[in-house]
Image (tube, rainbow, N blue to C red):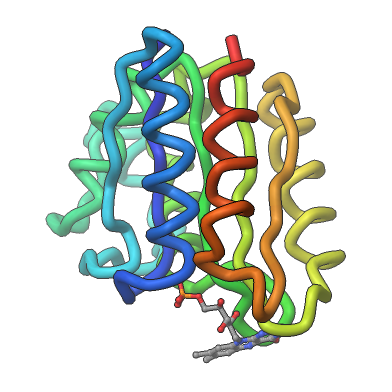
Length: 169
Ligand SMILES: Cc1cc2nc3c(=O)[nH]c(=O)nc-3n(C[C@H](O)[C@H](O)[C@H](O)COP(=O)(O)O)c2cc1C
């Protein structure tokens, strides 16, 4: 399976450690994995100009880093959304990368999973959003993994994520 991980964190810290653990497990299980550092990308919000659904024929009028994410949406069988919790939800960088999916309508990927790093463990809003999003896209929910506070980057937690990723098919 081809797996695209969208890491919404702008830092190489807690979420990045989860992403690396997931990637290692998924690769061990024979999957092809690519990681997109969405948190560091320049991706504007959707302008709702409808250029993509008319003259643009699926291309967005904004020429920014979103083209890399669109390529990944077209390539992947599974999308992994990874993010730290910022003000109770995913980062705005990841939100922009999700909302700009509008240009292609629906990704080729049929499966989705969610990795969240948080200080307090309050992930309800991000999880509810993920579930609603993948329901809307008709994708299969392959699970949510979250790491809270002091557990961030802990070897045992990262080993758990790696082991979990080896089971994803
Ligand atoms: C702007 C900002 C907002 C945050 N909001 C929350 C929050 O609402 N709830 C929470 O538990 N942690 C919050 N945090 C803490 C991060 O979610 C947490 O430290 C996370 O592990 C950081 O992941 P990273 O190392 O990948 O950036 C916030 C951090 C930042 C920088």
